Image (tube, rainbow, N blue to C red; front, side, top):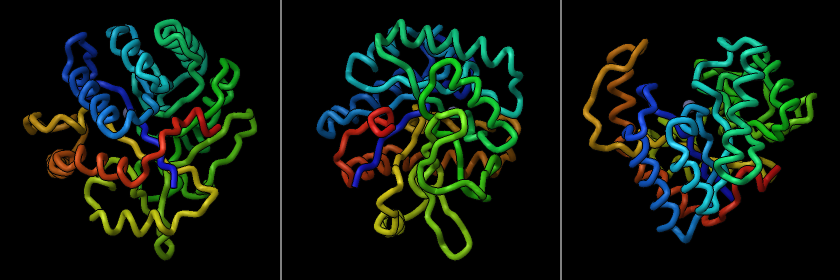
Length: 261
Ligand SMILES: [Zn+2]
């Protein structure tokens, strides 16, 4: 079983300082990759990271990881406007390619906000040269769910390939289980059970964020989020690095998402 490892490279404070906490946390993830047999991963970088911290992007790419794109400024696709989205995405793709010395062909929407209402963004991305997206939650349980979507990978009319977030079918529910709070809160025997039920034609991947690895981060309220939700998320993140390490041990393969297009 092959589970690709993906990281959404963003700064939760939105400041993108050269010495922001996301930087040492990213190095922590890179060291984890090295410690599990030189594992290769896909890093979806926010465009502003490349502007603020080219050295970090260069380091990730030099270790053989894929650099992909996670929007210019991490706003949900529902708030994008076509002309600006085109210009910012093109500029960021060019910059990421110059810094990394590799083609940048993958895209992930912030907050998995790719739905039928925002699918126009893919026409723009295909025009710029992107080949795949990893941006939908084929379930109704999230803020930006796309419950009618296929669970297996598929091609959009623009030609881009989609790798939907892996979900388990439980009765009439589709439950995410391989990343974020879902992975951090589910017991591992449940995760292993769901993995055993995954079909052969599903492209499996897990995801995490540098801030998930920040165990020393004191609790603080999150913007636009009820206090209790913020507390649940903060508590769940304390289990993140251990859970991710377990997933990487379950699947010792090293295919980046660009290797699976
Ligand atoms: Zn993100």
